[in-house]
Amino acid sequence: MSDDAIPAVLPLRNDLVGETPYGAPQLDVPVCLNVNENPYAPSDAVADSIARRVRDIATMLNRYPDREHIELRKAFARYLAGESGVSLPFEQLWGANGSNEIMLQLFQAFGGPGRTALGCDPTYSMYPEYARDTFTTWRVVHRRDDFTLDVNATVDAIIRTRPSLVVITSPNNPTGTPLPMDQLAILLDACRKAGVEGAAEGTHPVLVVDEAYIEFRDPGTPSALTMLAGHENLAVSRTMSKAFAFAGARVGYLAASRGIIDAVRIVRMPYHLSALTQAAALAALEHTDELLAQVDHLRRTRGETAHWLATRRYHGRPLRVAESQSNFLLFGGGFEDRERIFDELLKRGVLIRVVGPEGWLRVCMGTDEEMSRFRAALDEVLAIV
Ligand SMILES: Cc1ncc(COP(=O)(O)O)c(C=O)c1O
Image (tube, rainbow, N blue to C red; front, side, top):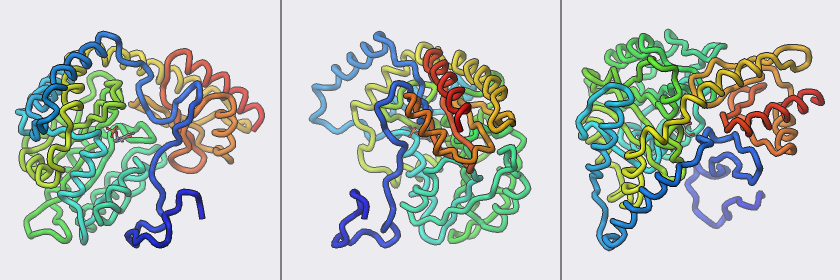
């Protein structure tokens, strides 16, 4: 029995017996490149704005916060209009404690016993957990060898499985693969035609595009937000955790039809978004340009690192690097013992992530200094494994 096993006297839900909490190791090492954070901390100016906003509402903490967080939803709308050129009324936006909570709310509203959610593997490892926690069946269609979607197989699965939710990550985690708009259009069309097992006649699957990393895409590439008009069953999940350098504040948001937002409002906890979180997010959104200032640089780091990785050799063969539009790279493709490479990097103070298909490892883009430490450590490790 492991130390954190749940004592047998506790009537834990049967399907949770033997389960462990999800999460990457939180280790105190010099170079943390494992959870896809932005390595650049908010500036003093941002911190001062947050402190001011929080001070202003601190004397009102005896009252519950605005349950509908309307000021924040309006601020998300302004941000998206600038970032993606899509104007939405605040009724089409919704915030929560990280996009993890957004996704859970979507599963709570549209999943459930007798329902299926469909994703495209390899993908973000939390989706099966949202499914488990909402008694939703989780099914996957495998991506192609280059990690792009197998569109025909996905369409077939939508028609055959009749899922209530289809979850596509763009750019995908852990591969970085974007979802081209023509493929999204095909999937939306399939959802428009498909029915939903366990739901009323005439209903169709909700297609969720998880755009947690979308700000790192190449400039000029459209977001799924551009497809919202006319697609009542499309939901786009976003977060301030990644490009926005705000992971610690736990702010995610959803852009979707009013119907989807209203469905999510049914399942949310009362006052789920604290006044402190709302104040901090509003302050951060006042500094959008500054918080996103490093995105260009991280994009360049991604390009340079991908190029560098492709010049390294493992057992005589060049490393493979998955095409990424995100702030991380999946690399290797043929590591015989990836745990050993992970451990050897960790011994050298560099924490990356063992995730994705066997033989691959994922590294997140850090500061220039962190990346040069990663490169030096990986060269040492490749020489001994
Ligand atoms: C694809 C994807 N979606 C959602 C999240 C959750 O992010 P957050 O809850 O911090 O918004 C992550 C975090 O790593 C992710 O990789």
